[in-house]
View 1 (cartoon, rainbow over the protein chains, first blue to last red):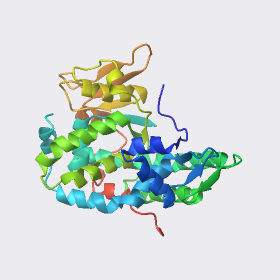
View 2: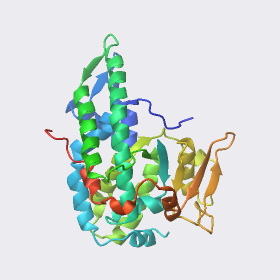
View 3: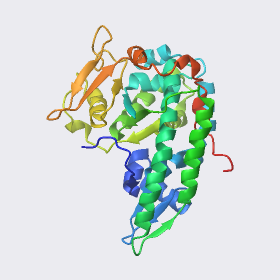
View 4: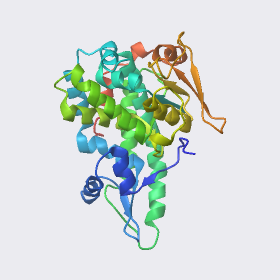
Length: 88
Length: 232
């Protein structure tokens, strides 16, 4: 059973790619660029901490600037506008 | 810790409507995510060190200590901007199928709302959601989950809330999820277990959010939650 816990999660590159909906190659690029902490196991597999992966989103994509830009673009939208568009 | 799962009817306004109440709650969830990440960073750093100690292993990339320090700095930065006494125990939980459903809805409705949103805007919106998630439960096949609602797409969201042992599933979808016509909670049960979750509309959920007044939460703080740590 996959209940949420405060347990550490060390992900394989495949799990990390699936989680973020990016290719495994992208995750390997992040590893090679040193953007995420990792351990390379004796068999060649990598382990990446989930927090390190999520934290890398901020550094990789400049989330602060992106959120401000998206909010500026959507400044006129209300909750009701969005719910109407999705049919709720 | 108070885990919650958001239906698309709550998540999309939180992401796309910059001044709404759902966004204000999203900021509260961002604070919870940063608090969770601060705590988990320490645990994961220790777990990674254990792996690194295996003979033949090799560690690399960003320094683990930096990760822990940055996670604490991000939390402190947002915490200082939030109202005094603001709770940090709310946690947004998702699953890979739920993240995929958010994205599908964003692609479907986004261009209708704002034609300039484009593919990049959709990707950005998904990244915001991923960044605010305190945890993502293990993947599962949506085709194999029990029938909880009249809409199979909603079943994955209900299933996620049950697997996550969520305190609430917040949904403004009254056709399929929060089906009580009076706005009360609708209870779902995970088959062959005693695990339950109550689905409730956002407006009724606010009755349970007694430890903070969302009017005091600046919705623009979402961007500040992801400010680069000082010195980076």
